[in-house]
Image (cartoon, rainbow, N blue to C red; front, side, top):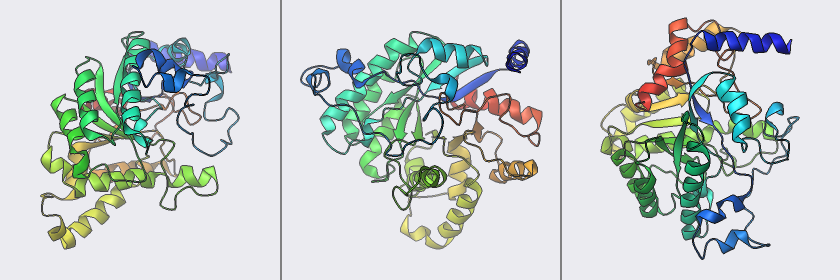
Length: 363
């Protein structure tokens, strides 16, 4: 059976199907990997024996057989899945003929609510580490700028410092539960992203929570956590981020997307009645979403009738709305050969697999 699967994937690659993966998680083995990229006094905080161990992880015990990773992505030496370039190349880039893979990391200093100077230094160290250890390894990789948003001015300087790298394509932010990143306080981040021709991507982190915080079980969190993207998206529009930056491109990564039609309807309905409160918002909320916001395929819900999923897609009103993603190396990885139900027309599948991302990132 395994041989047949490999033959099928090989045939798909030989057919020349282009695939751009918008969500690949590169990982460091330990926070100490960043030590060579830190100046004093920050270096000593992680390289001493009892130094800072790194940010806390999600407090759930993952109920999958290999934890957060898919089983074959587990490394031989016990380091985090996604930390070995050779394995990423073999299992993802080469196996599926990936033309470009956008690295989205898993380390988000924006989640740190203390010591903003330290968080800013860690973000810069992570960018230098990622560029040297990943972007220089393989030309298929594209990078995301890591920042500490709690100091927007320093974050903007970091975007300016590394944003000119030819394979940096976006700034990545976690969907934090304690603030709306669309507030004017964070405005310099979006200004810097637009100034450098970068998109802004939102991804969940270990601090992302639901409307009731952290529920009892992981299955509850994993089902309800899309609320964190919804809150950030509503905030971007309500605070006028797209009115100030009409060319801003935003990507919601790993949020799912079938909730988007109902949010558009509800937001438009409320805007008709309540727009006097936000006079700087000049257009219907759904228009900003269609024009400026994109989503990734993974995770994608699969109703019993696949036609229902395609109808949900049609309700959004844009064929450019979705970008393909695998979420490698995580347990809910999606293969490009299996992600779409047959209800999605072939030409649309091809757009989602590559050309939508090519246009969004201006590749």
